[in-house]
Length: 343
Ligand SMILES: [Zn+2]
Ligand SMILES: [Zn+2]
Image 1 (cartoon, protein in one colour):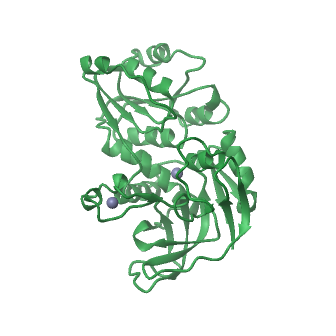
Image 2: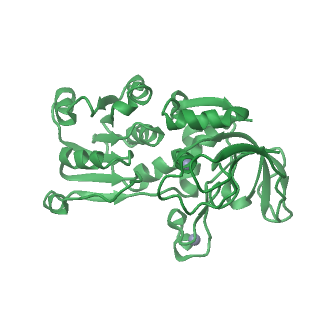
Image 3: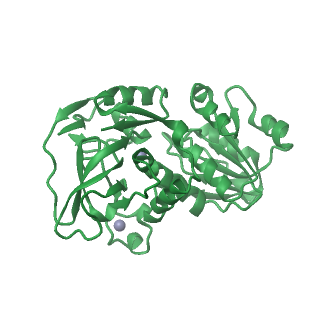
Protein backbone atom coordinates (compact mmCIF):
# COMPACT_ATOMS: atom_id res chain seq x y z
CA UNK A 1 0.00 0.00 0.00
CA UNK A 2 1.02 3.65 -0.41
CA UNK A 3 1.91 5.61 2.73
CA UNK A 4 3.33 9.01 3.71
CA UNK A 5 6.39 8.22 5.80
CA UNK A 6 8.59 10.46 7.94
CA UNK A 7 11.91 8.79 7.31
CA UNK A 8 14.45 10.71 9.41
CA UNK A 9 14.53 12.88 12.53
CA UNK A 10 15.26 16.04 10.59
CA UNK A 11 13.45 18.78 8.66
CA UNK A 12 11.06 17.55 5.93
CA UNK A 13 12.28 13.96 5.17
CA UNK A 14 8.76 13.04 4.16
CA UNK A 15 7.80 10.97 1.16
CA UNK A 16 5.25 8.68 -0.44
CA UNK A 17 6.42 5.06 -0.16
CA UNK A 18 5.18 1.55 -0.86
CA UNK A 19 4.87 -0.37 2.41
CA UNK A 20 3.25 -3.62 3.59
CA UNK A 21 -0.43 -3.61 4.59
CA UNK A 22 -0.34 -4.01 8.40
CA UNK A 23 -1.30 -7.33 9.98
CA UNK A 24 -4.25 -7.41 12.40
CA UNK A 25 -3.76 -8.53 16.02
CA UNK A 26 -6.61 -10.27 17.88
CA UNK A 27 -7.93 -7.03 19.44
CA UNK A 28 -7.37 -4.88 16.35
CA UNK A 29 -9.42 -3.64 13.43
CA UNK A 30 -8.02 -3.02 9.96
CA UNK A 31 -9.51 0.20 8.59
CA UNK A 32 -9.46 1.08 4.89
CA UNK A 33 -8.80 4.81 5.05
CA UNK A 34 -11.15 7.24 3.30
CA UNK A 35 -9.95 10.58 4.73
CA UNK A 36 -6.99 11.65 6.85
CA UNK A 37 -6.60 15.24 8.03
CA UNK A 38 -3.25 16.97 8.50
CA UNK A 39 -2.93 18.61 11.89
CA UNK A 40 -0.64 21.24 13.40
CA UNK A 41 1.26 18.42 15.08
CA UNK A 42 1.94 16.80 11.70
CA UNK A 43 3.24 20.13 10.39
CA UNK A 44 5.59 20.42 13.38
CA UNK A 45 6.82 16.89 12.71
CA UNK A 46 7.27 17.78 9.02
CA UNK A 47 9.41 20.76 10.01
CA UNK A 48 10.93 18.79 12.91
CA UNK A 49 10.25 21.65 15.36
CA UNK A 50 11.65 21.61 18.90
CA UNK A 51 9.55 19.43 21.22
CA UNK A 52 8.96 16.63 18.69
CA UNK A 53 12.25 14.75 19.13
CA UNK A 54 10.32 11.87 20.72
CA UNK A 55 8.83 10.61 17.43
CA UNK A 56 9.80 7.18 16.14
CA UNK A 57 11.24 7.00 12.63
CA UNK A 58 10.49 5.71 10.14
CA UNK A 59 6.81 6.29 10.91
CA UNK A 60 3.66 6.66 8.83
CA UNK A 61 2.12 9.98 9.95
CA UNK A 62 -1.58 10.67 10.51
CA UNK A 63 -3.83 10.58 13.59
CA UNK A 64 -7.07 12.19 12.34
CA UNK A 65 -8.81 9.65 10.16
CA UNK A 66 -11.98 7.94 9.05
CA UNK A 67 -12.66 4.91 6.91
CA UNK A 68 -14.39 1.57 6.55
CA UNK A 69 -13.73 -1.63 8.52
CA UNK A 70 -11.87 -4.04 6.23
CA UNK A 71 -10.98 -6.85 8.64
CA UNK A 72 -11.37 -7.60 12.37
CA UNK A 73 -9.21 -9.54 14.83
CA UNK A 74 -10.77 -12.56 16.52
CA UNK A 75 -11.43 -10.81 19.85
CA UNK A 76 -13.12 -7.76 18.30
CA UNK A 77 -16.79 -7.56 19.33
CA UNK A 78 -18.09 -4.08 18.47
CA UNK A 79 -17.10 -3.66 14.83
CA UNK A 80 -18.07 -5.50 11.67
CA UNK A 81 -16.63 -5.47 8.16
CA UNK A 82 -18.06 -2.61 6.10
CA UNK A 83 -18.93 -0.30 9.01
CA UNK A 84 -17.98 3.39 8.84
CA UNK A 85 -15.60 4.44 11.61
CA UNK A 86 -13.21 7.12 12.81
CA UNK A 87 -10.30 6.69 15.19
CA UNK A 88 -8.95 8.40 18.28
CA UNK A 89 -5.43 9.81 18.12
CA UNK A 90 -4.17 8.68 21.53
CA UNK A 91 -3.41 5.16 22.68
CA UNK A 92 -4.11 5.36 26.38
CA UNK A 93 -3.12 2.45 28.58
CA UNK A 94 -6.50 1.84 30.33
CA UNK A 95 -4.73 0.62 33.50
CA UNK A 96 -3.05 3.71 35.03
CA UNK A 97 -4.80 5.60 37.83
CA UNK A 98 -5.97 8.37 35.47
CA UNK A 99 -7.36 5.96 32.87
CA UNK A 100 -9.18 4.09 35.65
CA UNK A 101 -11.20 7.23 36.45
CA UNK A 102 -11.82 8.18 32.82
CA UNK A 103 -9.07 10.79 32.51
CA UNK A 104 -7.55 9.07 29.50
CA UNK A 105 -6.54 12.50 28.13
CA UNK A 106 -3.85 12.59 30.83
CA UNK A 107 -3.00 8.87 30.78
CA UNK A 108 0.37 8.30 32.43
CA UNK A 109 1.50 6.06 29.55
CA UNK A 110 -0.12 7.83 26.62
CA UNK A 111 1.24 7.22 23.14
CA UNK A 112 0.13 8.75 19.89
CA UNK A 113 -0.88 7.21 16.60
CA UNK A 114 1.22 8.50 13.73
CA UNK A 115 4.10 9.53 16.02
CA UNK A 116 4.87 6.54 18.25
CA UNK A 117 3.08 4.03 15.99
CA UNK A 118 2.31 3.98 12.29
CA UNK A 119 -0.57 6.31 11.49
CA UNK A 120 -3.32 6.84 8.96
CA UNK A 121 -1.67 8.60 6.02
CA UNK A 122 -1.81 5.27 4.26
CA UNK A 123 -4.36 3.13 2.50
CA UNK A 124 -4.89 1.02 5.64
CA UNK A 125 -4.30 1.27 9.37
CA UNK A 126 -4.61 -1.43 12.05
CA UNK A 127 -5.76 -0.03 15.42
CA UNK A 128 -7.04 -1.44 18.72
CA UNK A 129 -10.82 -1.71 18.79
CA UNK A 130 -11.10 0.57 21.84
CA UNK A 131 -9.75 3.56 19.86
CA UNK A 132 -12.56 3.49 17.27
CA UNK A 133 -15.98 5.17 17.07
CA UNK A 134 -18.85 4.42 14.71
CA UNK A 135 -19.66 7.28 12.34
CA UNK A 136 -23.33 8.32 12.49
CA UNK A 137 -25.02 8.15 9.06
CA UNK A 138 -25.30 11.94 8.91
CA UNK A 139 -21.55 12.45 9.43
CA UNK A 140 -19.37 12.46 6.31
CA UNK A 141 -15.93 10.83 6.17
CA UNK A 142 -14.26 14.26 6.10
CA UNK A 143 -16.20 15.37 9.19
CA UNK A 144 -15.32 12.06 10.82
CA UNK A 145 -11.60 12.64 10.26
CA UNK A 146 -11.85 16.13 11.76
CA UNK A 147 -13.82 14.90 14.80
CA UNK A 148 -10.44 14.40 16.50
CA UNK A 149 -9.43 18.10 16.67
CA UNK A 150 -13.07 18.97 17.40
CA UNK A 151 -12.95 16.68 20.43
CA UNK A 152 -9.93 18.60 21.76
CA UNK A 153 -11.80 21.92 21.63
CA UNK A 154 -14.88 20.35 23.23
CA UNK A 155 -12.78 19.05 26.13
CA UNK A 156 -11.51 22.61 26.70
CA UNK A 157 -14.88 24.37 26.40
CA UNK A 158 -17.24 21.77 27.88
CA UNK A 159 -15.06 20.39 30.69
CA UNK A 160 -12.46 23.05 31.46
CA UNK A 161 -14.33 26.31 31.02
CA UNK A 162 -17.45 27.04 33.08
CA UNK A 163 -19.11 29.40 30.58
CA UNK A 164 -22.64 30.34 31.63
CA UNK A 165 -25.42 31.68 29.39
CA UNK A 166 -24.93 35.36 28.64
CA UNK A 167 -21.13 35.33 28.95
CA UNK A 168 -18.89 37.41 26.73
CA UNK A 169 -16.18 35.14 25.40
CA UNK A 170 -12.97 35.94 23.53
CA UNK A 171 -11.13 33.17 21.69
CA UNK A 172 -7.49 33.66 20.70
CA UNK A 173 -6.36 31.73 17.62
CA UNK A 174 -8.61 31.41 14.55
CA UNK A 175 -7.32 27.96 13.58
CA UNK A 176 -9.60 24.95 13.71
CA UNK A 177 -9.29 24.65 17.52
CA UNK A 178 -10.31 28.26 18.03
CA UNK A 179 -13.08 28.23 15.43
CA UNK A 180 -14.59 25.12 17.02
CA UNK A 181 -14.13 26.51 20.55
CA UNK A 182 -16.01 29.65 19.48
CA UNK A 183 -18.92 27.54 18.20
CA UNK A 184 -18.87 25.42 21.37
CA UNK A 185 -19.00 28.60 23.49
CA UNK A 186 -22.19 29.60 21.64
CA UNK A 187 -23.63 26.14 22.30
CA UNK A 188 -23.06 26.77 26.02
CA UNK A 189 -25.02 30.00 25.79
CA UNK A 190 -22.34 32.65 25.35
CA UNK A 191 -24.01 35.92 24.36
CA UNK A 192 -21.08 37.29 22.40
CA UNK A 193 -18.00 35.59 20.99
CA UNK A 194 -14.98 37.28 19.41
CA UNK A 195 -12.03 35.62 17.69
CA UNK A 196 -8.59 37.22 17.74
CA UNK A 197 -5.90 36.56 15.12
CA UNK A 198 -2.88 38.31 13.66
CA UNK A 199 -1.64 39.38 10.23
CA UNK A 200 -0.68 35.73 9.64
CA UNK A 201 -4.37 34.83 9.80
CA UNK A 202 -5.60 37.64 7.58
CA UNK A 203 -5.44 35.65 4.34
CA UNK A 204 -7.65 32.70 5.21
CA UNK A 205 -8.57 32.26 8.88
CA UNK A 206 -9.95 35.64 9.98
CA UNK A 207 -12.15 35.95 6.85
CA UNK A 208 -13.72 32.59 7.77
CA UNK A 209 -14.33 33.80 11.34
CA UNK A 210 -16.05 36.90 9.89
CA UNK A 211 -18.05 34.77 7.47
CA UNK A 212 -19.27 32.78 10.47
CA UNK A 213 -20.50 36.04 12.02
CA UNK A 214 -17.97 36.20 14.84
CA UNK A 215 -16.42 39.53 15.74
CA UNK A 216 -12.93 38.93 14.27
CA UNK A 217 -10.07 41.18 15.36
CA UNK A 218 -6.60 41.34 13.81
CA UNK A 219 -4.40 42.15 16.81
CA UNK A 220 -1.43 43.04 14.56
CA UNK A 221 -3.41 45.99 13.22
CA UNK A 222 -6.12 46.69 15.79
CA UNK A 223 -6.12 47.25 19.54
CA UNK A 224 -8.16 44.39 21.01
CA UNK A 225 -9.45 46.41 23.98
CA UNK A 226 -10.51 49.30 21.78
CA UNK A 227 -12.28 47.01 19.30
CA UNK A 228 -14.19 45.29 22.12
CA UNK A 229 -15.24 48.70 23.44
CA UNK A 230 -16.42 49.78 20.00
CA UNK A 231 -18.35 46.59 19.23
CA UNK A 232 -19.49 45.41 22.65
CA UNK A 233 -19.57 48.65 24.63
CA UNK A 234 -16.92 47.40 27.08
CA UNK A 235 -13.54 45.71 26.88
CA UNK A 236 -14.19 43.51 29.94
CA UNK A 237 -15.01 39.91 29.16
CA UNK A 238 -16.07 36.94 31.27
CA UNK A 239 -14.04 34.23 29.57
CA UNK A 240 -10.87 33.98 27.50
CA UNK A 241 -10.11 30.79 25.59
CA UNK A 242 -6.48 30.65 24.47
CA UNK A 243 -5.99 28.30 21.51
CA UNK A 244 -3.27 30.11 19.58
CA UNK A 245 -0.16 28.96 21.44
CA UNK A 246 1.20 32.52 21.17
CA UNK A 247 2.50 34.13 24.35
CA UNK A 248 1.30 37.68 23.46
CA UNK A 249 -2.21 36.23 23.19
CA UNK A 250 -2.09 35.04 26.81
CA UNK A 251 -0.82 38.45 27.90
CA UNK A 252 -3.55 40.32 26.03
CA UNK A 253 -6.14 37.84 27.27
CA UNK A 254 -5.34 38.64 30.90
CA UNK A 255 -5.75 42.38 30.28
CA UNK A 256 -9.31 42.02 28.99
CA UNK A 257 -10.65 39.60 31.63
CA UNK A 258 -13.02 40.98 34.22
CA UNK A 259 -12.27 40.46 37.90
CA UNK A 260 -13.41 36.93 38.65
CA UNK A 261 -13.02 35.95 34.99
CA UNK A 262 -11.97 32.62 33.54
CA UNK A 263 -8.88 31.89 31.47
CA UNK A 264 -8.82 28.51 29.73
CA UNK A 265 -5.56 27.68 28.01
CA UNK A 266 -5.24 24.83 25.53
CA UNK A 267 -2.53 26.07 23.15
CA UNK A 268 0.95 24.57 23.00
CA UNK A 269 3.79 27.09 23.52
CA UNK A 270 7.28 26.98 22.08
CA UNK A 271 8.77 28.69 25.14
CA UNK A 272 7.94 29.38 28.80
CA UNK A 273 5.75 32.32 29.69
CA UNK A 274 6.49 35.16 32.10
CA UNK A 275 3.20 35.37 33.97
CA UNK A 276 2.26 38.05 36.52
CA UNK A 277 0.47 35.70 38.91
CA UNK A 278 -0.16 38.47 41.44
CA UNK A 279 -2.35 40.19 38.88
CA UNK A 280 -4.36 37.00 38.49
CA UNK A 281 -4.57 36.50 42.26
CA UNK A 282 -5.75 40.04 42.96
CA UNK A 283 -8.40 39.75 40.25
CA UNK A 284 -9.41 36.21 41.30
CA UNK A 285 -8.97 34.99 37.75
CA UNK A 286 -9.39 31.24 37.49
CA UNK A 287 -6.90 29.51 35.22
CA UNK A 288 -7.85 26.22 33.57
CA UNK A 289 -5.81 24.08 31.21
CA UNK A 290 -7.06 21.36 28.90
CA UNK A 291 -5.19 18.74 26.90
CA UNK A 292 -6.33 16.36 24.15
CA UNK A 293 -9.66 14.62 24.76
CA UNK A 294 -11.41 11.48 25.95
CA UNK A 295 -13.86 8.96 24.47
CA UNK A 296 -16.76 11.15 25.63
CA UNK A 297 -15.55 14.20 23.67
CA UNK A 298 -15.29 12.17 20.45
CA UNK A 299 -18.87 10.99 20.92
CA UNK A 300 -19.96 14.58 21.63
CA UNK A 301 -18.17 15.77 18.47
CA UNK A 302 -19.85 13.10 16.33
CA UNK A 303 -23.29 13.79 17.82
CA UNK A 304 -22.98 17.56 17.33
CA UNK A 305 -21.80 17.03 13.74
CA UNK A 306 -24.71 14.65 13.08
CA UNK A 307 -27.14 17.24 14.48
CA UNK A 308 -25.63 20.00 12.33
CA UNK A 309 -24.61 22.00 15.42
CA UNK A 310 -20.98 22.45 14.37
CA UNK A 311 -19.85 23.81 11.02
CA UNK A 312 -16.43 22.71 9.83
CA UNK A 313 -16.89 22.83 6.06
CA UNK A 314 -15.38 26.32 5.59
CA UNK A 315 -12.03 25.22 7.10
CA UNK A 316 -11.42 22.15 4.97
CA UNK A 317 -9.28 21.96 1.84
CA UNK A 318 -9.24 18.55 0.18
CA UNK A 319 -6.22 17.05 -1.58
CA UNK A 320 -5.86 13.74 -3.35
CA UNK A 321 -3.59 11.47 -1.29
CA UNK A 322 -0.99 11.57 -4.09
CA UNK A 323 -0.63 15.36 -3.49
CA UNK A 324 0.02 14.80 0.21
CA UNK A 325 3.38 16.58 0.32
CA UNK A 326 1.84 19.67 -1.33
CA UNK A 327 -0.88 19.56 1.33
CA UNK A 328 1.85 19.72 4.01
CA UNK A 329 3.44 22.71 2.25
CA UNK A 330 0.07 24.50 2.08
CA UNK A 331 -0.51 23.74 5.76
CA UNK A 332 2.87 25.21 6.72
CA UNK A 333 2.25 28.37 4.67
CA UNK A 334 -1.27 28.60 6.23
CA UNK A 335 -2.78 28.59 2.73
CA UNK A 336 -4.98 25.70 3.92
CA UNK A 337 -6.44 25.77 7.46
CA UNK A 338 -7.26 22.09 7.52
CA UNK A 339 -5.84 20.03 4.67
CA UNK A 340 -7.67 16.72 4.32
CA UNK A 341 -6.26 13.88 2.21
CA UNK A 342 -8.74 11.86 0.18
CA UNK A 343 -8.07 8.22 -0.69
ZN1 LIG B 1 -3.93 16.47 15.66
ZN1 LIG C 1 -3.40 5.28 31.27
